[in-house]
Length: 374
Image (spheres, rainbow, N blue to C red):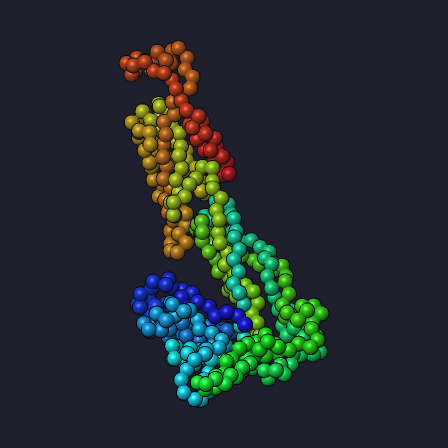
């Protein structure tokens, strides 16, 4: 049987969540999955799961017990007790702790499929402008031959003769303290309540097969590193008619040679000659979509930032775009003739060494690529 999900995971909260956070999360999810509102398959099951998690975590005593012991399995035996009579297994203790919310689970009830995760690496500009693409993922799907039953075509699973389809066995012990009844998963059918005498030739009784599925994905404009895209129902197939899980696509973004990103803003660095910085100029700047003119005031110092409004990344949740911030760096010439050197000495009244760094040369190369749209 599928393991019960962690209650904190069900409500999408941290283990140190406050009572208000628990209540807020429950209200949102209850509205989302309520059978009167959500008619999708599996919504009622998810609603019950959310309700059960809230019933436990909203009660201080139940939450404390859950934090210490986790889910109490009603199928495991519990010894002890006083006086004569019948004693149930752990199911009775579960009822005592959780108000009767445990009970026996139907081994043939629909079960939701597992979620899947896929990491997608995209180019810098694809993250900015979005893209549509196809991906291929391996996943388990319901067998088309037996439609998930696991039985050979023309046959069907039968009730287990040992547990009569309940999926549980009772072991009775007579002790000086009374009669104790322990309930365990049936060893004959592994707790499913069903036995397949003739297995499907395609899935060999599993009811599922491994397939490569091609899925069309739309990457929205403005996604950033680490963003997740949820594709409902594209995970592993469910069991016994249960809904499929979800597929979560985790985005990784390649670095760009010229542009850097911080949230919705774009940063870049452009070189200026000494004359441009001292006298002022109008230069051409590459942006994500076009080339624009930028006026450089006379006397501009190296390291100065200029802002190009709305030339950044489209906002993922909202309207408009971020800005582009341009940092200017004054490049020292690497070679001067005698006349140029003398003029500079006359201008500054100082001796110059004419040094420059390779860093400035790299700026020019990156800027050239940006102009070419690379």
